[in-house]
Image (cartoon, rainbow, N blue to C red; front, side):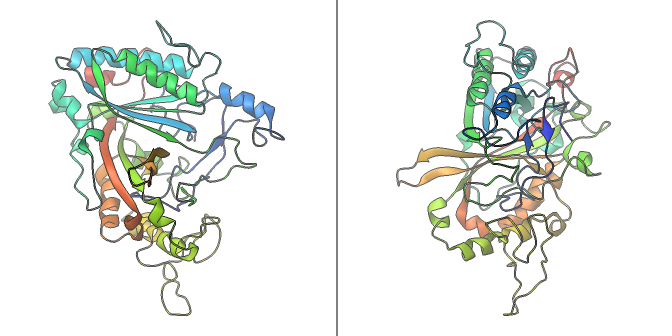
Length: 416
């Protein structure tokens, strides 16, 4: 179940509830993690050994798949896109990915970056740091590799809920950074940005967060900023069809994407002032689940299958026809599924005093045409939640398989 030989970690099974898919099937990432000796929350009455082990938790850089896909969600994340500088092409991109891969390997092992390390994270261990690299559609024309561009990177269709800012969408290169310590995450972000100088410049950057490991007395599903339990129905690595739905198979096309995945990234703003004006019953009708524990309105627990045909005393279905949980169920979408691994974000308040907050939606699939696109099209046709969210930025990236020892990420593409 662990990704790329995650060491010093114990996965705790499914711990995400469907509550809020925000434009995708299932819910947020369907598993949580804690250190093997974590016995309670940090702080007074908590476990000091849990605190110590959080910094020691290490994610392996090398493996069949890149880290940061099935790696358990971290408490801090940075998403950043780069555009290649004028005059930079395939040779320069290869040198950059070689530098970036070497730095990611060092930082994920808790070692300083090569050269002038900023020492921001000097006192910390690896803190579950993971770094993931991907390529946007524009990368292939910039590097003369148009014939290697996957058809799965064709532009996403327009959706009625889109209010996209082009300056904060797409990009030649994409990097995802996650860690359980903010300084460790920032240290990695700064190191990679410095190493890109002269080759690529930042196009956009987004910062996110999740609940910290050990914040609750026992592992619980995370909640999003609407207060909904979020993440039950994610596909799980233990499922027989997991790999075929999430990763490009060996022998697939193009060959350099074997073991890789396609990621859709969306900045989804939650219109919290409007949402919070609803009463509890109204909020639960929009989602189709109880806010308290994530259970379906038809009864049971968080993981109970909703009874979509069940009717109440008034003869109406208990879970409304436009409820988010109904529309996003895989069995209501021809089996379309994806692995969601988002971060929440809060970027202050806008000129009206309304919170600029929501979800940095990140979802993984072997083919967007079989994952994100069909589900989002259905949501576009009548999801009750659409009234309370706004898609403000979007990107689609090809994330190649992991690098073997002695290799860098993307080497099969750039040197093939």
